[in-house]
Length: 493
Image (cartoon, rainbow, N blue to C red; front, side, top):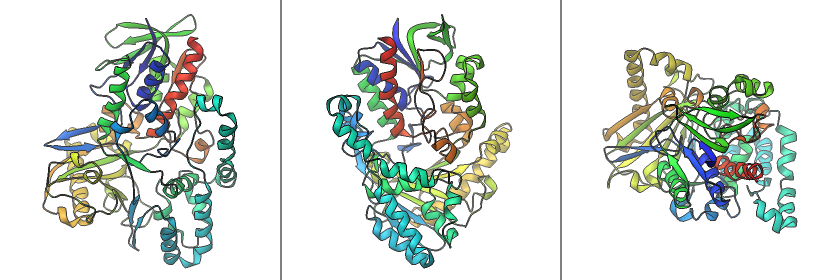
């Protein structure tokens, strides 16, 4: 019998597996796909490697929530974190600016763009700079150095103060304090108008703190580094193995039943799978507390995206793209996320070969074009294969044309194109509605920050990953592995 079975080899599941093995627990991970990582993956076509994940990672500085477990398990050298400097380029019809760690230059740019908002802008950047680094003391640090850990907690006072001031504001509400908010919006509103205003403060705090990194390897290789260490430490992984049910006996989780009918017993079960499927399909409605069921049925999700991956026949250097990411806003808001609006929708371009030279053959490059997309529209299109392919072709035409306008050096040099839609993400990751990061960080959800790690009355059933941490992403999934392993440890002891 296994001590713990983990459903899903995403980063949250792999992180939890590492910490559980480290605590001496016999652990098995079940993964439906043939590779690890979940959303943190990549794929190869004609010599090009295309990523689906990792815009940036925060918490990578000394003592950070990402760096600490990477150091603990000897993964720093393997994941090859590279500091994002500059962070990003933003293009609008008004102007273009590249944002580096010296926020003063960006602040002056915005003040020149909107002189009437200088006072409000200075206040915004002052508050962003005041936020502390993303350091979370480990359980060992809290035991060995309680005073130092207490000092770190006290340093979070500016975060608490900011939460009281803006915690109830979405970005749209926050922007009302600017006289020329439509000119300001693209530069401060990276995550969308209905997300919490706090997200913008955090992002520019990370820029200021020099705490935004990206791996110089593919997302799949990033996940494989975790997988390899897990196996080295004695953990087991079964791929192409889909869980169909969490077994329950005597009021406790008793293991997992597979799709083929096989039953694997365990003393505890941790799910890193899609939250809705975990609670309502693998467990069943009867086990889900009404308050949690209400959240799952009504809280907004982080949207899905259209990802157009380009393999190009020219190298893309820092002269072509000073930053790895370029965010392009060709028209003022509002705009929809439907295909009909794709010509004027914001695009994010990522020059993958700039940070990971191995992503492209010598003398060539990889460019990703991403846009928020409407899941319902693509789900309806998918029901008619002909219309779906026509829609994908239309999206490809628009994305390639816009990419060639944004990076003229690739015009006529595009050698390969792959189009992934929201239903593509749903098919390969099983994430509800193809969501790329779980719960949307709306003001209401940000007040929660986390959903229960132990979501039901079953004392030995747990969840980890982006359906526990509001806003999702790699850093909280990595950190969550340590948290949930500690909770499982208490139950198994």
